[in-house]
Length: 452
Image 1 (spheres, helix red, strand yellow):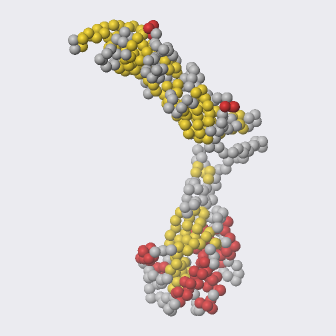
Image 2 (cartoon, one colour; image 1 turned 180 degrees about the vertical axis):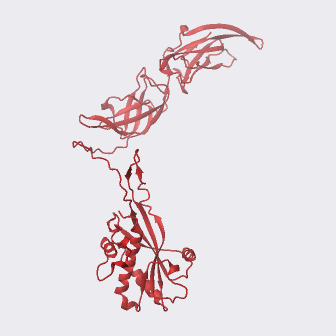
Image 3 (cartoon, helix red, strand yellow; image 1 turned 90 degrees about the vertical axis):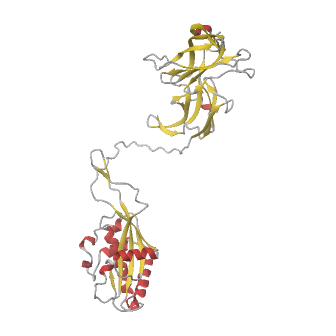
């Protein structure tokens, strides 16, 4: 990489190219010609006659887009410098021609542009020749700092010289800012100049173990498109349901199916790249609860000696709704699970109504945690003729009856009150996931509870 002298070195190399071209074409140009690298306002001093001159002026510096995101100088936890990323710059130049007589400025500009056109890349040899002058030329024409000191020829990327187009408005603004009289001008960009700090940095020690291994494996992109019941995409999913995980690249050398982080991988011979069939166990394993569940396919890679599974490729997270099941409600909740039943009556609009209160015991699969929201839903079954069916909603007590240190419970007791006597269909909601009702003849009939 170059050092901080690189910017001035590029200008010196370009000036040398122009100088060499003027010398080679001296007879064609006619008269003495000066090549300079001055700001335009210093080229012509008040009262000084205009002479034949080519002037190269670097008017602007911009970050190089390709190198600007390489990185910044960084340090480790102890403050030691660990990297010196290069500063990539583009240099913008104006090549201006001055003439003592008419047409002379145009002739000089033409020769100058031809010289730069024939040197689209600043070669390493050209840079070394320009920054290390040999006899009979005097090396004192260069400042001592630039004489083979910038390392410009050693930078990793060659410097390209690119003609630029400036609009009339841009040229007008430039020369107004320079506060000098306008002369014929061409614009160029030199790209890219790489400046790297020479500050010492801390390098990591090499790996001491010579028994290193390189593993080459094909890159995989496992993806889950859908998780549905095997019976159809509209069928509900609960404990014991056969489901299908559909997608692509679902099978690797080693494949695991994780549902909410719990490994429920089916036999390997049932897996295909586009379909993984899986039957949810009944009862469900601990830690898997009702609600919205995530599914992910993991494909570890075995490495090391002895071989150990390491994290490899993972699919996106698919999702499905796992519904709860009331295991003590097949086909109806037994009377013994209606605890503390209390009967009362109330007169409403001249009609005596029998009411029931108590606690309903529900045995759930999967279990519920203390933080889940559990709601009991009752819908009257076969109401008396001429009457609307009653419907009730009751929330489980705070904590759902989970007793420390247990993480969950399979039994939830939900109090109910002021329920009109009758038989009711029973559902339970756990975090919005609702248990199923059975309708063998197209009409919901179970599960139910008798509160008559």
